[in-house]
Amino acid sequence: MKKVENKIMLITYANAMGKNLKGLDEVLDRYFPGVFGGVHILPFFPSSGDRGFAVIHYDTVDPAFGDWHDIDRLAEKYYLMADFMLNHISIRAKEFQDYMARGDASPYRNMFIHWDAFWPNGEPTEADMEKMYRRKANGPYLTFTRADGKQVKLWNTFFEEQIDIDPYAAPTQAYYERNLGRLADHVPLIRFDAFAYASKRPGTSCFFVEPDIWNVLDIGMRPLRARGTEMLPEIHENYHIQMKMAEKGYWVYDFALPMLLLHALMTGRADRLNHWLQICPRKQFTTLDTHDGIGMVDVADLLTDEEIDLVRERVDEITLPAKPYIRLPGMIKQTGKKATRYQLNCTYYSALGADDDAYLLARAVQFFAPGIPQVYYVGLLAGENDIDALKRGEEPRSINRHTYTEAEIAEAVKKPMLQRMYQLMRLRNTHPAFDGDITIEPDRGDGRLTILRKNREQWAELTADFKAKAFTVRYTDPATGEAHIF
Image 1: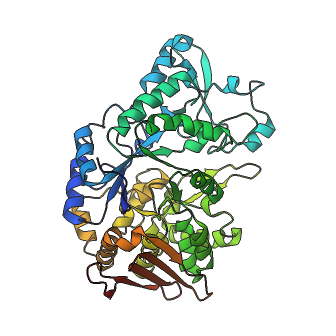
Image 2 (image 1 turned 30 degrees about the vertical axis):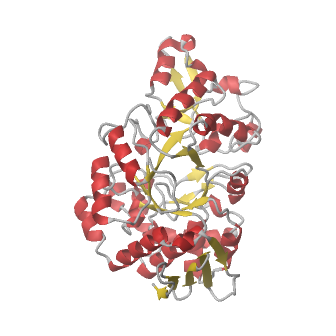
Image 3 (image 1 turned 135 degrees about the vertical axis):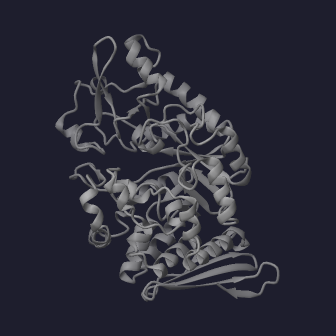
């Protein structure tokens, strides 16, 4: 198994660029040699919903995708990342099914967070509900009827096929140990999906509650530390949370970059983006697009409310054809605030109006920015909004989750802009300058951004002009030291 390298990582489903893992392997070999050093395969386990995120068990690869041999074959070529849900499991999981069947006699009974036992008075007060950070309009719980006829309210943060688990319970910790240990045998990097919701305490937001969250993280990390496996926490919220994680030495996501680049390209201003690049963590993975939407909560305090609204309104204009088919936009309830949208449902290429120059410029900045770039498979192919998926009644995020046939891939990669992007990705993966220091020139107020990557005498420099939507890359030839222009 390959360890984590400073090379671009693909984000994809097991069946989004090929029918299964073998098909994915063949597509990467055929169309993208040298373009990626790593692959984040989104949940590839048996699941009951949320396109893999309602995991039934981690014992096997979903047979529709392949088996562990297919994962191991990919792990010999790329450093892999797999998902693990600290916060929840599928209601089809054997642990939950056992509790439903055997009630209080089940050894898994304490895995699940009983709503009435959680609150001191059996129910939250109005003030408790106001403080809570939640994804649903009502309380985050579902009511189930056990086999013995008793009805129980259990904590449920997300979808009906998922049920939250208590990280402090002994059966939960045994579940972590067994499953994280198995994953660590196959991948060097594990993503803790939505882990901030696993810190729950009455009278708080129940989201990234300190110091509880560090205790939860320590519990989850025990099986990984013992095996030398690295972890990437997935958190969509104010950038200060990412800073706290980075200060403790963890990998973090740069979820602020997507909105900041959209703002720069829509206004011709580079000052907000420049400020973030100056202060952002260096041990991070950068994104422009993922299987979720483009996060807006991640740039609070980096963009003003008016600047966020400007980007949102322009993206909303672009996605207007999708509106009749989107049932509910992504909403979140934050402490002391009304429920608001927390993400934009749109492909990144569509968000930029399918402007090739703007899109390539955005990717160039991402590849030079601090951290390891991740490229989502739809973005890899400059995919536009999948309105047909919404017409079929699929969830709003399906607008950015198109499943590609090989014929579609073969046609998409012919696009000159994408061929140029792949060349730039190969340069990012191989040039020694990217393993050295990084310098972001101070903002000059002219809509330009300059980033220098330097490793001893080897260097690569990006000059980006957001007003002209153009850029230049200059770099040394590692063999001769001569300067070249991309």
